[in-house]
Image 1 (cartoon, rainbow, N blue to C red):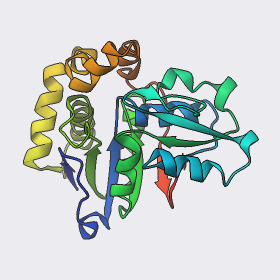
Image 2 (cartoon, helix red, strand yellow):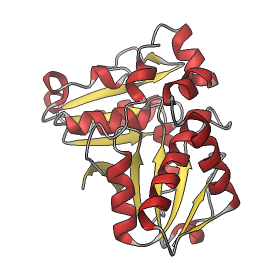
Image 3 (cartoon, one colour):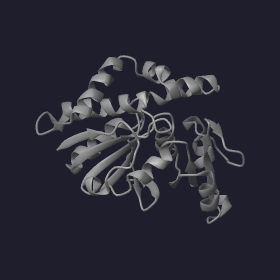
Image 4 (tube, helix red, strand yellow):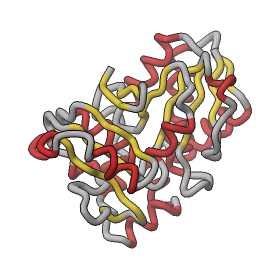
Length: 240
């Protein structure tokens, strides 16, 4: 089994994904929102690439059972029900609901890797459960940080490095790491004692602090908060 990580969020060759498990990571904050919302009883998440697509998709479903969520420039989109903080996605708002979600980076990433054998929403919240699922499936793995508007993302790569570190310790033998995976693991080990520091040092983390959403950084840095493995299949994310 090989673990690779792609540092920049461009679309991989579909042929390279056909037999791989793919883990999409957007710690700040899309995949954190997805995991949190499903834990609070959301039925499913439909990731949309654009605001226009999100409005069009939501219009297909009954309004009483469907919510629009997401952000642009880290702020809730006008006309949406929810923004992009996982702390908004509580049972009182989302239980029994379908959520059409669009964010600057994370929701697009799912569509970039849609040819993967199994596509998982990964975050610090569900890191242990995600590692267990990928090891159980025994396929090669691609970790896919969603990046920051096409650029390298520190917090997503640190999360990927933590995945690699835990998988390597659990598997012990028979696990091959690419040079990129080794680099991500070393980067994680730099922040192992204080994951929140990596989020605060990242460009996107600083943007969230400046926009008044700084409380989301330590919240999203919580590890193994939820034993969920959300799977993206045929355009929809649901709990496994």
